[in-house]
Amino acid sequence: MNEHIVVEREAGLWTLRLNRPDKKHALTRAMYSHMAEALEQADLDPTVRAVLITGGPECFTSGNDISDFLQAPPTSLDNPVFQFMRAVFDFSKPLVAAVAGPAVGIGTTLLLHCDLVYVSRDARLKMPFVNLGLCPEFGSSLILPRLLGPAKAAELLLLGEAFNGEQACAWGIANAALEDGPTTLARAREMALRFTGLAPSAVADSKRLMRAPGREELRRVMVEEAELFGQRLRSPEAIEALSAFMQRRPADFSRFA
Image (tube, rainbow, N blue to C red; front, side, top):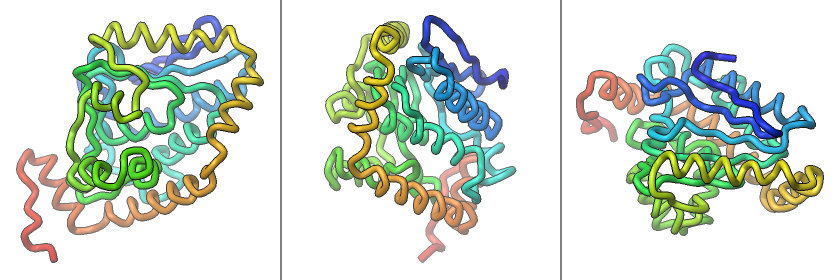
C-alpha cells in the first residue's frame, strides 16, 4: 500500500487513513489508485463489514495535488481519479467518513456517496471547481440541487462558497457535527464498528435498496461530468486558473468571453 494511504484493520473494520500531513493530505494519482484498490479488496473480503475513511483529527484533505494533477490530467475515464469514484460508487458495504479541518473538492463530493458522515464543527468544506475553471464532479451537479435546492446548490457549486460542519449536518450532508477532530474520529469509528455486529447480507441488501432509485441516472451524470471535466482541464480558463493557483496570484478571466 502507498505510504500516503494507511490501511488499519480491526474486528471487521478497515480504516483508510490519508497520510500526507505536510501537504494537508492533498491527493495524488497514486493515492487515488491505492484507495480504489483497497475498496475493491474490502468489498471482496467477507471478513470486512465496513470501511472508514479519514484524514485524522486535524485535516481531511485539501483536494487534488495540483502539480501532480497537471502532470497527468484526468482526461480519460481510466484515470485513477475516476477509478476511485467508481470504486466508491460500486462499494456494497457501509462506507463511513470522519471529517475534520479542510475538506476541499472531492473531499466534499466524496461525502455525498458515504453512508454515514461525521464532521467536526469547525470543518471547512468547499467545492471550488468553477473557481479553477472546472466543473462539478462525482455526481455533485445532480445530488446537491436535489438535496439542498437549486439556490443553495448554486452558492456551493457556482460560487464555490465554503461551509462548516454544523451547516453540513443541518443540510443533510453529515449525520452529526462534533466538538473537535478527535471526538469526530472516535464517533465515526464507534458507529462504523456497529456494522461488525449486524447481519452483513441484510446490511448490503438494505444499502442496495436505498441506493437503487436514480442510481443509473447518477451513473450517467458522473460519466458526463467526468468527460466535461477532462475537456475543461484543457480549456484556456482552467489553464489560467490553475496557473494562478500555482503562482499564488488571483486568476484573471477578464479576457474570456
